[in-house]
Image (cartoon, rainbow, N blue to C red; front, side):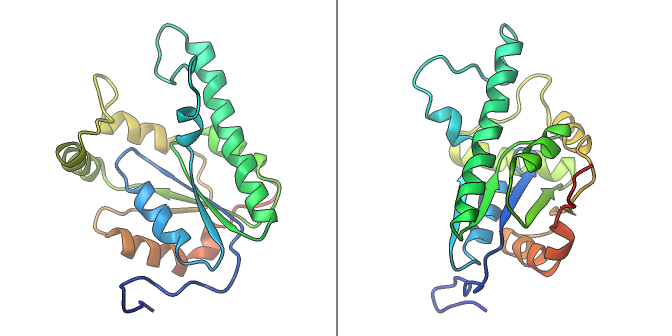
Length: 197
């Protein structure tokens, strides 16, 4: 139920840890923030923040000159967000994490969360929807996610290599608020098994 200010009433329960992933421009940031707002004690953890705290020396995942170091630091970023989410959840907060985590890395991330319940939500709008949203965001903010061979189609292929755990939502025709309503209505589907495959 929405308040007079247009915000939803918080849910009076703790929801453990939620990982929101999906392609670039699939709406992860907005959905994660709106989802976190639905719990009475919650945090929104942005995975990209962990590399932004590095003052010097960080090698990004797409650096062709130092691929091994880039991979090592990407895994560090993932471990840090899983650790922070675990600690918040142990303190009674619902921890909602958003990041670009795909493939087997999703299972490794979930394994790094040592409290529960653990939830996974994969936002997977169509490639055409992602491309259109990216162009709208680029025009509005100047943020560019896709360059060269890294296209919406390639990013979608990376998402598709993620083990089919948790809740997968086609958000092509959903607004961010509608997406959150869908997630909460199907929250049981988002819970990941223990042990993980």
